[in-house]
Image 1 (cartoon, rainbow, N blue to C red):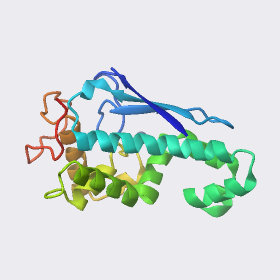
Image 2 (cartoon, helix red, strand yellow; image 1 turned 90 degrees about the horizontal axis):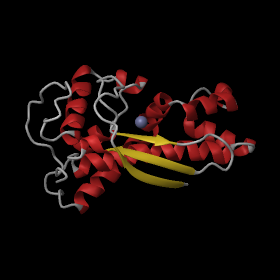
Image 3 (cartoon, rainbow, N blue to C red; image 1 turned 90 degrees about the vertical axis):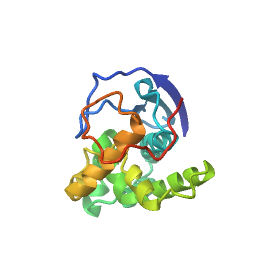
Image 4 (cartoon, rainbow, N blue to C red; image 1 turned 180 degrees about the horizontal axis):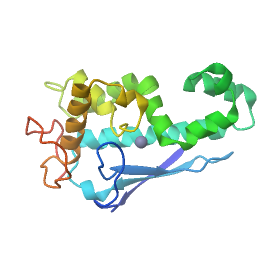
Length: 202
Ligand SMILES: [Zn+2]
């Protein structure tokens, strides 16, 4: 898998997801055998995103690229497809259908459910280790890292099923790390706290 990162000015008019935020990043990939090149555009509009927020943003996008690479690598190989179906979960009899797997690979919503069901622990752990390496170890909590691992999954069934207090806290945390000063004023509820946990980019 080869992933390229670029900055891109998407701007505030592009909305999506539950909270109608402009997307902080997007990854462009192709479905098909031998397609392992992915380009991730980071939204320059959020230039003051915190280091912790950008780490979550990058991990989230890398998981999208990873899912599609796994699918592309399995095309034409029934054993690999079978393994993929097991990793992707779902009802086995349906999940062995390549068409179903292709729909997973195409749909960011399905992939967001996968991130929550299969990768939340690894995502949280990676963020935690990043924070410790950045010197946040004294006050960084695993609970915070877990909240940030939900980054951008608002359209998923798994996120929708969370208690409303959890959803609110997670989205406020997302907003704080994405827009630490609140200067972009993108319609998020005002958090009950004022400081992001990560360090805003200068
Ligand atoms: Zn996503």
